[in-house]
Image (cartoon, rainbow, N blue to C red; front, side, top):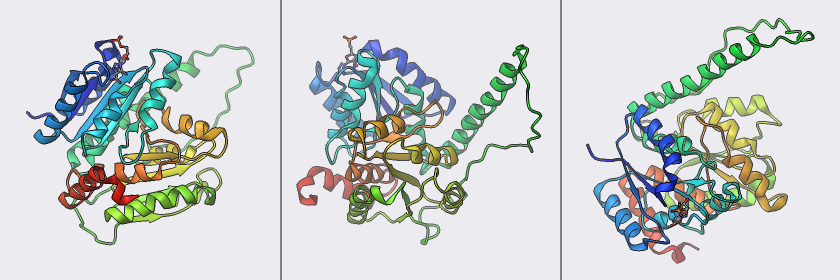
Length: 342
Ligand code: C2R
C-alpha cells in the first residue's frame, strides 16, 4: 500500500494534533505516512523527504507545526503537490504558526486550516484526493453525515436536561430536516465540457481586485471557471441557488473581507475542497483571515494569505493537477519560473 498523504511534524511534540489527522484518515481508509522533520532544525531532511515523496506519488502533504511554522511553507517550496498547513498552539494561541503557514508568497501556497485542527487538515487532504476518487468522496459524505447526526444528538441531550423554571420551549414543528449538501454525480474527467472546473465566488464587488488576480492566473494556467459575485448574507436564496447550479465543479474559491462568511457558507453546502482568500477591508484582513480559517471540525476551508488571489489559483492548479498531466506540467513550470508569470 503506497501512501497518498505524507504528514510531516515539526516536532514529536506536535503528535497530539497529528493524532486527530490520523483518526480521520483511518476512518476514510486513506494510506498515509508520517515523519518528524523540522525546516529549522533538519532543513535537508525536509527537502529530501518532500522531493522523494513527490517522486514516489504522494498526492497531498500535510505540514503540522507550531511557533514560527516554516515547515508547511518549505514543503510548498519543494513540491508542486498541494500542501495543507496545520498551525499548532504552542505560544500566542497559535497565531504565530497560523501567520507563518498562511502568509506564503506567490507561488508557494499553503492551504492553511484552523489552529490545532489536525482533523480538518486531514479532511481537506481527503477532499483534494476526492476530486478524482469517487470512493473517497462517498466516504467523506458518510463522515459529514456523522457530524450532522452528532449535532442532532447533542441538541436533544442538552435540551432534555434543562430544568429551569422559566424554560419555555417553543413547540416548533420542523419538517424532517435532512443534511443539505449538493452532490456531484458526474465522475468522468471532462464528461461535460460545459462544466467549469472551478467556481470563483467573491462576496462583493469590493473583492473584485483580488478576484481578478485569481482569474488572471486561472486563465494563464488553463483552468476553466465560472465567477459570480454573491453574498450568502445579503442574498441567501440566490447564493443557495448558485451553489446548487455549480454542484458539478471540482472545487470552490471564495473571496471575502470583514467577517468572511462566504467560505463557511460554501463548505456548509458542498463537500468539495474550498479555498478561501481573505481580503484586506478593515484590520488589514486579519478579521477575514481568522473567520475563514478557524472552522469547526468537519468543514475545512484551506485559507491562503490575505489578498493572495494568485496563490489561490496556484493551489487550485496543484489540486487539479494530481489527475491532469497538462495542468501538472503547467503548475510545475510556473513554480520553477514564477518570475515569467508576474
Ligand atoms: P519542540 O517541542 O521540539 O521544542 O518544538 C514544532 O513544530 C513545535 O510545535 C516546539 C515547536 O517548534 C516547532 N517547529 C517548527 C519547525 N520546526 C519545529 N515550526 C519548522 O521547521 O517550521
